[in-house]
Length: 299
Image (cartoon, rainbow, N blue to C red; front, side, top):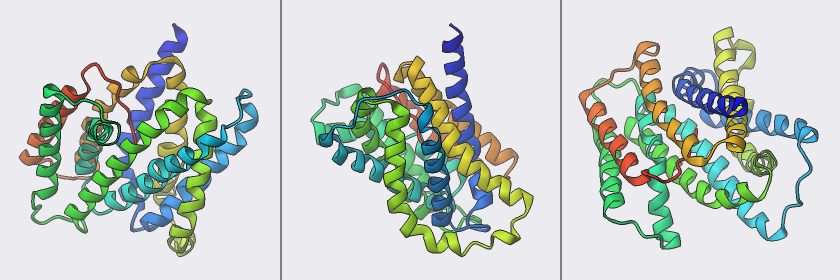
């Protein structure tokens, strides 16, 4: 019973961190460090911490040679594309927009499973897909007058592609997460992802003026790098050991609500009627598509 409560606390904490991260990441990038440079810091630190924890893990079966290609694909979709586009897109759009579009991840999973695996969609799930896609499209296509974002539409599209990439990752990773120790699997995924992200973002990483960072800048970067990456992933890994995927996935509904509260109350972002309608459509779509189905979080 104690482990179950700890698992619920872990996944709740992870989702609170993800929700706050939407606003804090915008404090870090692009002003203090450019998006791809922040990604380099994110994966380098997380991968290092995963390897430092390796001796504490229980011995696990060796990785099957036939699974390495899938692990590389997971690194591409779950770390490289997912994180590069998320941070870059978030730096260009509103935190509220990004959090709502991220919620579309559970909607993307059955679409991709239908395209690649031939899974049946059905009437109820089709209605949910239509609602979710309509809500996301309404957010992306709505012109934001007087926006302080660099390019809201382009940022929203990047976050949407990031959600699609993570959905593919979830489908690929799900059987491997059951086959191998989750922490060990994530260590290899991050290691491969780091090898890809580092050359892409090294110029932005090395050009950051670290000596000029204020305490607030260090806190923002540290929160994204350690809190929203390593710690959040570890909390979710612990929860996976003691809860089923459906219970963990139900907490994803908290992310956009908390993210909107933080973004409007602390960061001063507006919350419009269009965003409210979009939120209702996306929430309804997620409910219809995933009623009785496992859901997953990302970020």
